[in-house]
Length: 131
Image (cartoon, rainbow, N blue to C red; front, side, top):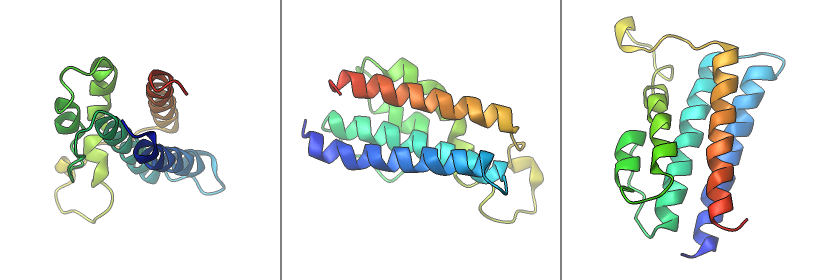
């Protein structure tokens, strides 16, 4: 593994977590945007792990599919719950006629828990790298 290939992915994870926190606790909170950034952070974290394992990170927002590329990875069980964020990759980015296809807007408390969950998974991965 080339750590220099992994670090840029982790920087993007941190940027999305920062954006999620700003969307939650900034002067004009926007829960939907925070949910989007949580999905992006989780997706990029899984892609960082793929890169660390020498697997090409495909263009996909589907976290379950991405984690599925890591069947023997010790932290896969920790990552699989993040797949529930996949619908937020596109849920609020476009106006839709079918509101049944859009997940309900999560609360600030729920999203704050998501941020902590992603931060914990990221920290666990960084520990596995010896960081």
